[in-house]
Length: 247
Image (tube, rainbow, N blue to C red; front, side, top):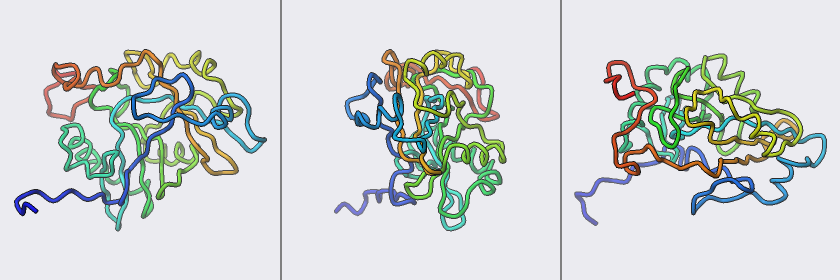
């Protein structure tokens, strides 16, 4: 072993901060993306199992998935893979870690020991440009281990500390992709290129059962990222003191 090599960073949670949400039929997928089973897709979009299935559909956001965890009574800003954001190779994740530190009192009030809040960090445009009307973090899940908190509780707890949550497009019975697409615009978060899609949540007897998502087929992933566009990064938001001409 090369003693001069840097040790591999550890994941404070011991696993990823947030997993992948499987796709509904017709959703634009990447090579490694997985789809829902036909049975699960029907529950979300056609017919529930019984009166205990409740379907919530939220506007899908297009940024960098991040999280904040309370571990051993301290807050840790994380990237999706579970590594500390402060150690990331990307400027946007360092800015997220700084933003979390600045707003630590809100996250302290939000989270109990062992919980984490995950959401979309919209500082840098990926495949969608946003004219943000709110701060750059949108929280969509509170988890303990791999267990999710029901959407209404996420919304109320986040509202109590002034954290933004995704627009709710629908709540109640199963709802088709076509019906959701009709209600997708106008979005609530300032998407200039159009809202990229939606996330369906199936909740049952007070617990989150499973999730699915639909991404518009014409969506181009990461088209504004410099490693794909070959140009400069496009920012939706920058910290105070940064050159605002980049917006």
